[in-house]
Image (cartoon, rainbow, N blue to C red; front, side, top):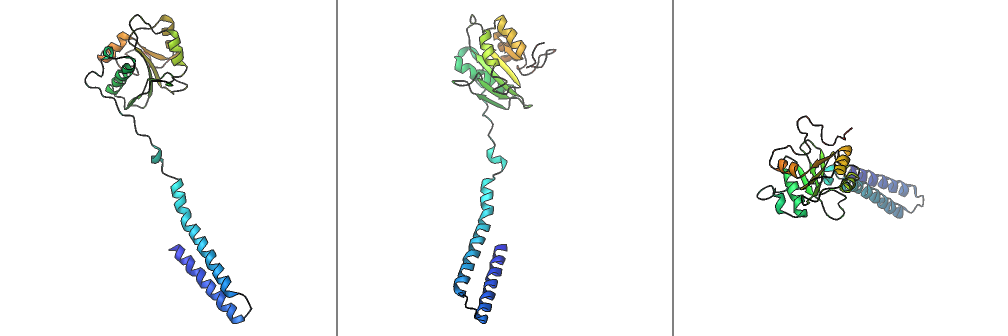
Length: 218
């Protein structure tokens, strides 16, 4: 409506100018001036009417950038059978444990270039849990180098609220010391069995009388 009003006003002004020029016989080239005026009015109105639509295209709402939550793993059947899988499958069994115990988003991200993170999970209260999974034989213990590599990325790169390393075997003494000093939660073979069988809380929850997970030892 505003555009039509402006157009009407412009046309009326040009008509008045043409009439005045004809009456005064001033020798002005009326027709070219009127045509130029109409063209200028049309160009201004077109630019005015198109500008809002361009702004709407360039400023989508925040919802346009929202990422859907990761799909939760299946926890049925043999999803928790850690002994029946290989190293890659072990990551999925650990992810299934996270989903079973209430995480609202769980994603397996292990592989080339994972920078130490095999499973990413978000707890119901919004904490980010970063897990590394070591599917080792009982006589192959997780050493301090494994912990140091994970410790160098779990907080600084993956922004973990709780960092967890899970293994089917056990940890060397230097590895255990490093993990405790850095606030990395250790889950060995016995702890994994207890977690799986609901005999222990998930690693992002403290056991009775224990400090909160992710708290470095003094």
